[in-house]
Image (cartoon, rainbow, N blue to C red):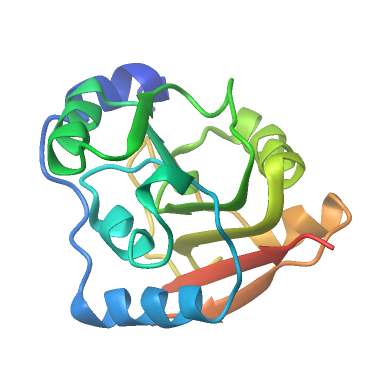
Length: 181
């Protein structure tokens, strides 16, 4: 197995186009965001801004902060959305508070030694909700590349003392939702 350091990996990978959201996925996320209440948003792994576009239909730019590991993606996002606050940093070491912490296909890239700590940080920093799109546990074709990890997020949240709801989107992807009481 190749050595994987997320920061080094995403410096190069971030220069190319990444996630394209299908119209069905956009509608699915849009409807879900309509069903919850939030003002401030912290987006992890803002990437090409696909999720950012959807989020900005539900909050004002002044209530949005995003981050990405890739300097190239951060610069592109600043050009696409000059009114938003976008930063380059690694969420394994820094987290910002918000009503909603959200990401799509980010957590599968977090190394196994860091995932529980990151989930704990997300829980402690959210004021209301955590939403993430990730592969459904046990539904992903194997083998994965050395920079992808399969996690049972429901079990992880249970180990942390919390409940996590899963809303399947398709055969192998789900929207995971945590509500802070």
